[in-house]
Structure formats: C-alpha cells, structure tokens
Length: 55
Figure 1 (tube, rainbow, N blue to C red):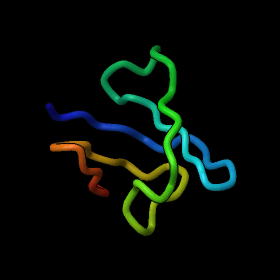
Figure 2 (cartoon, rainbow, N blue to C red):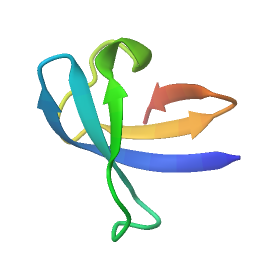
Figure 3 (spheres, helix red, strand yellow):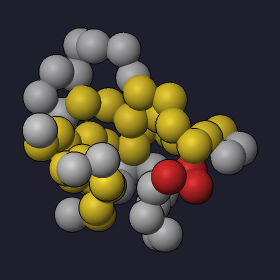
C-alpha cells in the first residue's frame, strides 16, 4: 500500500500527519523517531512498505 502525507505540526517528540488523499480524515499522530531525519512542518512524506520517505 502506498500513501502520501504532509506534516501539519510537531509537538515535542511527535508529529501530526495529514493524509493527502483524504484530508478530511483525522490526522495521524506519530513519534518523530519513526520519520526520516530532516522531517519538519510542511514536509511531504511517502509511506510504503512500512517506511516513510521524504519527497
């Protein structure tokens, strides 16, 4: 499965991600440690095979 997200905000060690194909759904709450280095607010991410990649 392939999904695209945008980081909408970062609070402490956690990030909130919006699903780019379903923005009306609830944001995903995720530990920054699971995201690639360099992830910041506004970063576009691709999720595939249980890994995130910065676009």
